[in-house]
Structures are given as structure tokens and as C-alpha cells.
Length: 296
Image (cartoon, rainbow, N blue to C red; front, side, top):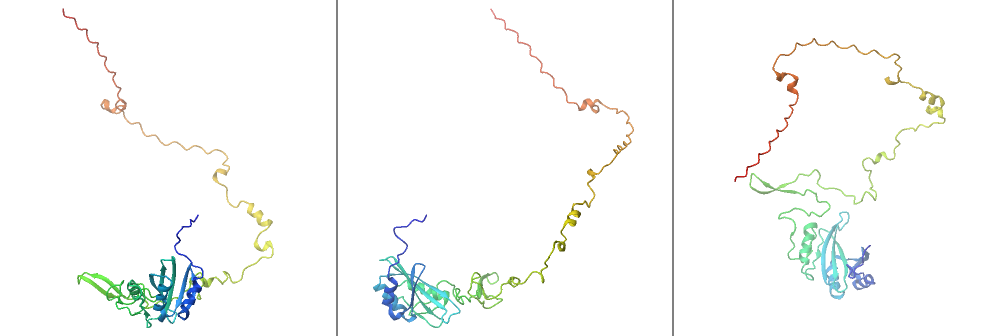
């Protein structure tokens, strides 16, 4: 049974959605609740102003995380999500905006210093640019890394292989040869149903036989009294033990005995006495010691 804690993980404030929607005004594109949290979609150019308003006027003092999402089918394929926490009301909200490879997002390092590293992570993994970040460089991948690993079209093997060369006695980079440059995703799970035929599913709508055979009377199947009678008759010989052998068969003639061997000559060790175990001798009885005379 679940136990309710006196201090919940976060609090849903009644009327928060309507209050923030009215406060953000034209900056807001949409608002809805998801997984117990309020999610606000705002214009990309208004991100800094919206987050400053939420920090100063609505007590969302802490920036917990900045995350990225990639949707290659969209015109602006990236979403940048800001997760805020109010230490005063124990409330969490998320603010997100859309971006593309060529449309930078305003930096929020002017509001929270920790946003510098968080924006660098999103840039390194997705390639999203942040205008105003003076230190926008890679933070997780190696020097000279090509591409952005969290994009959906990034190959799992990467573009370069890092290994140690025994010939050159140093670490070298080598290009990876891929069977295909990019992979296509339908973004649909098998449970929702794909718009293409999976291997093996083409047999689902076909009948196992061209024309199923039907019978109208028992004689068509070979069943009936005549078939039952034939089934009861024995068609194989009985087992040998069940056959009547009549008179008992004569016993087989004994084989010829070997001619008697001459009596063995030799020592006693060659006789049967040598093979018999020797009888143990009874221990000899000790004579009682003579009584000592008393010297006088």
C-alpha cells in the first residue's frame, strides 16, 4: 500500500495554468498539463523575457535542467525544454520553444549562471545554437568530433573510429565505412500499427489451401460401420509369446567335454590347500607367575 508523504515531490497549484497564461500574454503559444506538471510553449525570441518573468514575478527561482528533443519531420526539428523549480511553493513547470539548425535560441546565462554548461550540452548533442553564449563549445564529445550524437539521423557507429595504432604508437582517428549514410524512421511503434507490411505478415490474409474440402456425408470421409469393423480386425501377426508352440522343444544337446587333464604334479602351494585361508592360531596361555618368597 502506497504511503502518502507529508512533503510531496511537487505541488500542483490550483489555477496556475490560467494565471500564467494571462501573465505571459502574447509570448505564449500553448499551455497544457502533462504528467502532473504544467508545460508552456512560448515563442523562441521571447524565451529570455518569459523565464525572467517566471523567476522574478512567479517565484520560480531555480533552473533545474535544459534538454533537447529532435523531430526530423518538422520544419523546426528541435525543441529546447527548460525545467524550472519554485523553492517557495514546491512547484515545477516546463517551458519549451522550437528551433532549427539555423535559428539560434536566446541564451539565459544572463538569468542563471549554470545555464552555460546546460546550453553547451544541448549544442554538443543536438547542434542547437544559443545566441549570446560567449563559451558555446563542445562539453561531452572529444576534440574534433564530427556531428551531433543525439540527432535521429546520426549513425550509431559515428563517422570516425578512435583506436590506438601499434605502428605509430599513438591514438589515431580513422573514418568509419557505413553500409548506409542515413536511416529513415517512421516514428511509429509496432503497437500503433505501421503503414507498411512487416516480413511474414503478407501470409496473414491468404488461405493455407486454394479450395477447402468439405464433406456432406460420413462415407466421404471413409468413416462408418465398415471402417470400424476393419479397424477391429488384426492385420499383424501376434507376438511370439502369444503363439501356441505345441510340444515343448527339445533341450539342446550338451557340448563335448574336454578330455580329462592329467593330475598336476607340484608343491603344496599348487593344491587347493594353498588357496584356503590359513587358520589363526589361538594365543598361548601365559603361566601364572610364581609367588615371591618372603625373605626372612
